[in-house]
Each structure stands twice: as structure tokens, then as C-alpha cells.
Length: 346
Image (cartoon, rainbow, N blue to C red; front, top):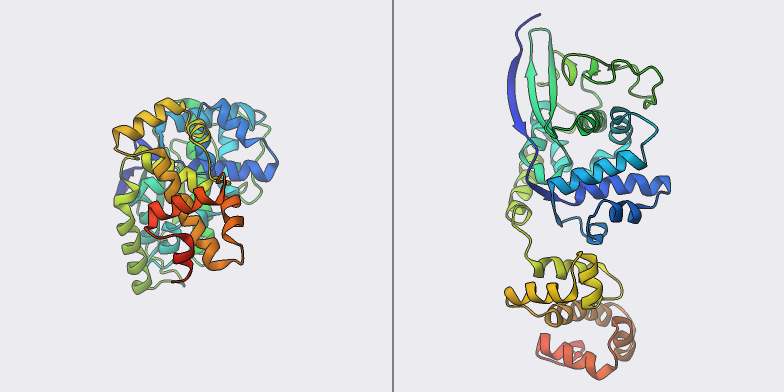
């Protein structure tokens, strides 16, 4: 066998990542009619992950969720089969904005490399290597969970979704040779996605997506250097936000914007898995009051109603949950410096 040469390698596991990856799993369960709120509750995750894809989640908490997912929703198949089913059914465009940029890449290698640079935006639990031999090219997936169940699941999910990306955005690229897995050597009764079954090989030495020679340098039909650079820079501009540590005030504001009607202190605290007292104390440590955040979000929504609907100010006050129109007017003036009527006439 010819020498393996590694072109690029990167560990995609981060100590914390956004709840976006969990929401992708919940999307698949919603389509199956499963009770996603029960799964979140049983995994000891805050309910806020259901409405806030930007919420930072400990990698250990994410793995507890995946373990629970396998024990309940996919208990009738092996972890590898569950990973293949989820990965193969995933619409890879949901990994926007990476996928939006990658489809304009000048080569398949350049496009797939985009996923290595922004681990906050994906769901991988693997170390990923791009490489080649004299006869073929490959992507190797080395799971980093240190758990046999999650290792098999993660490798299968990541490989199947990667293949889905290739099929979706590079349909004219050389087709894969095989998908090789270290796991499930002795499993005889398999539940596998139809479109993958002809490619799969089990009990192999590595977890690899094997491609014919020339795949890395293949130029996609959608290639555009200008579009690729523009979208790449757009992602780069988002990185400071993606990589910041969540402040409590950020979490509260995002929950207030997500919930309808705009929620109380007790409701938001419950969503975040905190008591109202603890939430108030954490906000105070940041020099912020819950009522001020609540007013800011309410007034922002009120401006939309004033500008884009025929509702009266009294009706808007009721919709936003104020006890009476005077309370709405006072809150609006605290935030904007003018009354709703004055702002409407601008």
C-alpha cells in the first residue's frame, strides 16, 4: 500500500459550542413526531436550548444529550446505524453560513476545509484529517469522545453528513469509493440509509471517506473566487460574537426576544434552569436589571407594531402584556425618551 500523506488535520471539538447542533437533532426528531421537550428535560439541559441556537453548551452536556438520544429514540439500532441515519437525512445547508460559502470554493478541498476553521458552527466530535496516497484521496474521522458508543455514533454522523454536503454542492465531483468504519464488524441485521448501503464497509482499520484521485483539485461548477471571499469574510466578521462567552444579560435578552408573549423574570429563569433570585443576582453582578432588559425588548417589538400594523396603542399595550396603556407609555418613554404617540408621528 502506498504512503499516506496528510494535507490538513484539525480537532473540531471545542470546550463549549453553540446549541445549534442540538437543534439540528431536534429538527430530525420533530419530523418523526417525538417529544423533543422531554428529551431536553431528561438530558438536564436548560429549556432555553429549544429557542436559542446561540446559547453556549458545555461539550459534556452536549454528549449527555447524545447519549440520552441513543438510549431512547435510537435504542433499536446500533450507535453507528443511528449516526448514519441522522447524518444521511441532514440537510447540510442548515450549516449556513459555512455551506453558503463552501459551494463557491475553487476546489473541493478548499470548500471542505471551511468546516475545519469554524467548529462553533458545526456538530463534530471528531478530529478530521484530509489526506492522500498515490492511488486515492481520503477524509479520516477520529472520534474524540473517549466513549465507544458516542465514538461510533459521531464518526458515522459526521461522515454521512459530509458525504451529503459533497453530493449537494459538488454533484459533478468524482464519486466516493467507499465509507470505511472501524465499528459493527459482527452486526448482521442492519438498518442503513439506502443511498449509502453500497458504499459502506465495516470492521476496517480506520474511519475514512475514500475518494478517487483528483477529488481534492476538482473545481465545482458553482466556483466563484469573488463570492467565496465575500462570504468567507462575512463569517470572519461574526467570529468575535461566536467566540465570546455568554453574559447573563445576553441570554436573558435572547430569551425575551424568543418567547411570546414577552416573559416574566420567573419564566426566563426557568428556561435557563435558574431560580428567579439567582438570575436577578447574576444580572446585578453585570450592572443590569431584568426590568430594563424587558422594557428594551418590549419597546423594540412595540416599534414594529406601530410602524407596520394598524393596531391602536392600547391594543399594542395588551399584546405586549402591560397591565394598562399608561404602563406601556412609561416604559416606552424610559427607553426612547419620547412617548409612543410622539415616536409614531416622526
